Amino acid sequence: MQNTIPVPNNNSMPFDDREMLNDALISQKQLTSDYNAHVNESATPEVLNEFMAILNEEHQIQHDVFLEMQKRGWYQTTPAEQTKINETKNKFSGQQQ
Image (cartoon, rainbow, N blue to C red; front, top):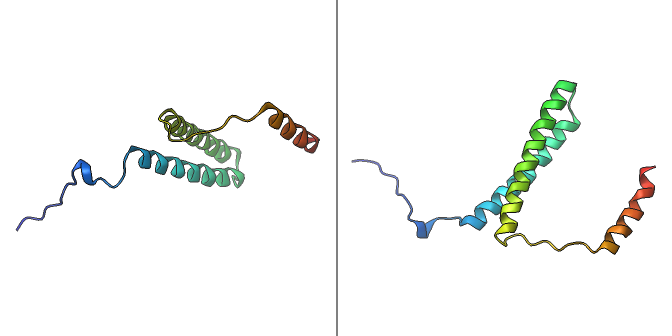
């Protein structure tokens, strides 16, 4: 008797494109969080630089996934009003000194 693994047809796939991209975005957010923790705990400049390079790459991937979702209308954002931007900027500008 031969063992066979059933191949699902397109109608029974567990994820559609939107769900896959959403899962990828969530995964990238977790990865960047994890790499950020490693950057904060790097003991040498060489390790720090390597983790920073990886972190930058992961942020770029995350942004690419975000842009693809936004392009397809699956991740809507609302532009901030300029008055709100100015209020927030003023609120935090005094804390940097």
